[in-house]
Length: 116
Image (cartoon, rainbow, N blue to C red; front, side):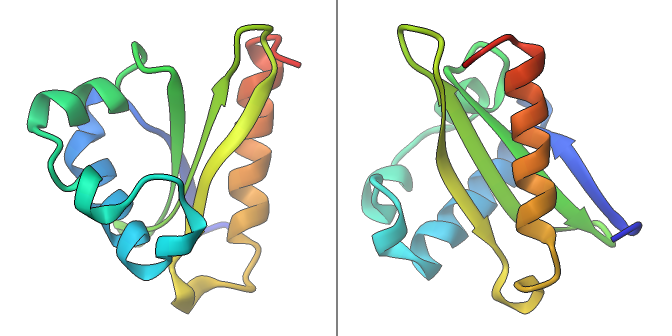
């Protein structure tokens, strides 16, 4: 697992977020509330906002050899509870502990932000 980088998404990552989010929706359409047909209509500005710190959703990416292989997203509700809202690991990398790393990253983020 030393060669896996967990990266907190920022606005400059908008295109990477777009790519993996659309791939996720195609690969596992029943795992998400959003649909591929809806999300593919987002323009660059919407993707930049979703990737930015201004967004109500925070995403983390798992990266191996410059390839994005996983994503996790979480958000807070009105009473500062933090919820996992999206997660996917590339099928080739499932069972390797990637999801554990992503969950740990978002859990640490929520703890740091003092969410419940």
